[in-house]
Length: 226
Image (cartoon, rainbow, N blue to C red; front, side, top):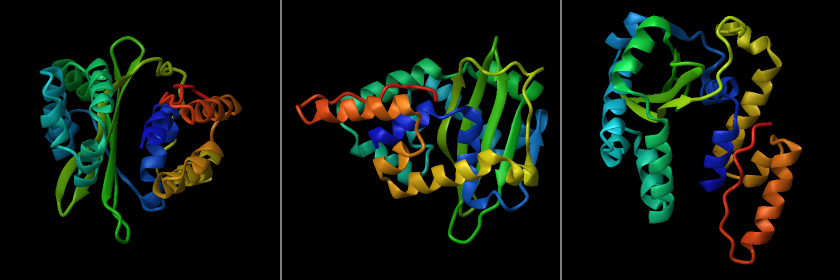
């Protein structure tokens, strides 16, 4: 779980969004933009979660997540939950600013379920000066749950310079294959699977950390961007 958290933080935003939907990406997604997002259950859930995070009600925000995420949260040690709580508070968007950001430039992409997988969705939007909102959701039996965020990610690309690739065009981009590999790594739960996709610097840092952990050091893999 700790290895997974560190890798998720290090993953570039575009790849993270694609990886979350990789199992169902071959099907045509539904894209909802702007004001319409606030009327969608995912938009309402995003605002509700942001309000809880802003109020410091982390446990209540966690209860809005999937059953699997809630179970993972309960398995964490008190120290790890405290660390994750601090990170969520630090990256939580202002609810009113979030609503305005979604209204002006939000993009909600819903990926249909395939087989036994859940319907999933990604939510993104420019936020503040150079920031970007990122959130993941999943629908089970018609009800939407949070999976990650909403979080403010700093250092987003200049909207005037970035290139967005959506729908079936993603399948033609080289990052698609990498996203599928990353999705497989998530489901495998194997640190080695993640390391194969990490930068050389991250791999070296993990090897050093593993050696120190063997001596009783419990450091987490540094948040390194490949």
